[in-house]
Image (cartoon, rainbow, N blue to C red; front, side, top):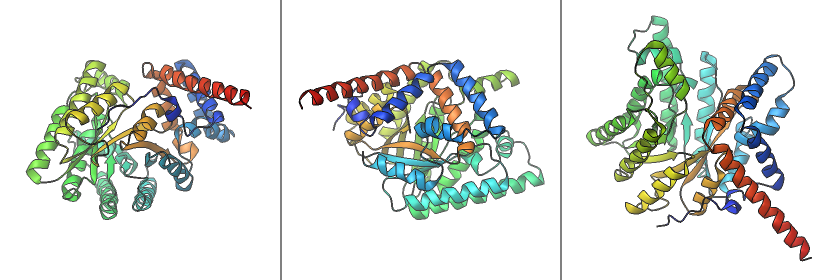
Length: 399
């Protein structure tokens, strides 16, 4: 058992980055310190793309290169192979957003099945993920979550979406490739939860193939986690849980205020942190029936999980415990965990530049809003740059 992971070890954290890549990351994170700059360039990018201006190359060589694996599966596979050299797995995700026609949904299904088939014989891709609004209508999910009757046309839409979902889950089961359902906004999450439970009942009799995501900034998620545990015990199935803090805070609070209902969001960040750590302990205590993925950039929660694994005698590389961070962020956590033989993955989105821009903008805006995130990334990169400069001086001085 080993909890001696040093997140200050920049040599391991940036071992896969060349000097020029490190310099580019430093420049990019330095820009993202300023919310005004991020918002200005976000709006400018959307306007330029809509106007057909030739800016794709600039996007690809900067923010796209930092946070995405490529424009297609072949390009992404190169990044997968590079990460695997450092004992880091990849969660490939066809990260196209805002596409909502039947042909778009079918294309997303086809792409996801390609990922599953690629992952079948590749340990570098231990699991994958699915955003349900990528394969079915968010409007229909919203109505179902609110228990509003669907029109005949909407019912056809939903049945088509559910057929796509079942085809994806069946392929995941046949290929033995676990698949995480991403969490989305609370007003559609209700029915996403029901679909996830249905697919777990259908495909999780032997192991957790279907996994769901809990956003712990919601005050009801500990209760829901306990419900899933009861379901597992009563129906003799496994459950899979990815824990995250949450991605729609401002939108959730604004909508609750607009429609006059209690916000589903915790009263404070401290309460979110408390429930995140509480969920970690619940999952580890039930590790025989739960597969846990901790999707976090928070060092304190990561260390909490390490210590709880030690306290509860869960080995470093237990097949039911994964850590995960976004590609392009928190390499000091990812690479140092991997070096200590923990199971760790990077969430690796890919897709056509224009279609992935909404994801990239969200990543940039999220970075400016996370307290201390940019300062931490910049501090560590700067330390590594200084180390390398010193080493080069020593090397040249000894010639």
